[in-house]
Length: 450
Image: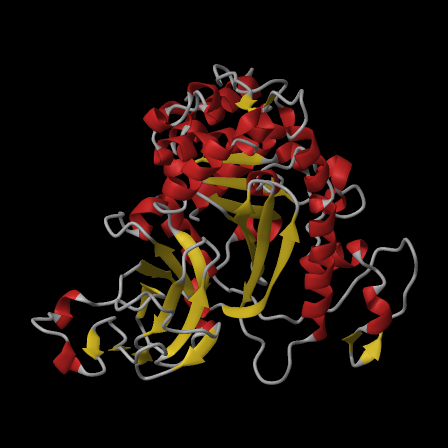
């Protein structure tokens, strides 16, 4: 961010802290229809259109480090092979032979100079071209060029691998718009994969996602962890085109991640050597100071270093980015009332040797915060399945959720969604970046000068 953008965000943070109501003329948001979380028809529409026509994070280049390395990926319900074609390029295909549909690869990870179907031996190169088949004499007037593997569109954001099942989709860069430029400060091309794990959740994927798209809950759910370091009253929401959003929430005392993490899990100090090779002492209810020698992303700016700078990308990507490294959170539906919660951690690599203990503390502490977030998921699912659940009223602080739902309906197609499940368009262009900032800044300057 340039200095003008930083100064604007400082003013917007001050505005959010001092405002007595939502911005003038900000639209009143209707309730989200409750059946969006339980209706089988809507779930099927999501599957057919939202997941089929969106850019989805499928992996990290370090998972397929060498030419010929592959990853079998099926989080979106489709069998996909990601292949490292060259140092700079990745290709992606449906994991199905063009002969009789057998899987080309069976292992989650592997490496091969060509792709060979184990059923009848049909062979493909890394561009998906059919380059060989057993007993070609028995295929009369057969055009091999028409039997390439079915492609999946793939693009990179630094070391992150995104896929899209819609071959006619616009580019990832165009979809992200100004966000693509904003996140360059985090140097995704230089970030290593530090950790990767999943949870199974007993709730609709949107319930879990939405818990990470607002800070209205922080004081209640995270009173001894996040709330001690994050001032949610100064949170600035930004609504970008295509349903994406950003949250900038200032820190109270600017504690770094390990300090917050240790408050979430002080017992970690009992088992972890964190300073000069000696175990740190453990004192209950004390603020902990830990030496954090993790390398930094040097280009990270003032906002990322002093605030939680978190982006949500349609459909299922949320990431609170910072200079030491950060998690990327993803939610994948497996049923109407179940999902997989996936976490990628990316950061500058520490160099030689095993992962420093400070990362164990940071990740374990963050997972404690996630546990706090996930605590209500199952209970909310019981509520939305009840006889009386009829909708979700959202506050101004939760408006990014509404903005996200508006885009989901656009992707699915308003003509396909039953009237009682539609989200009424409310957050218009005048409240979308960059116009939203202009309106709030004008109001802030008016009452500041009055």
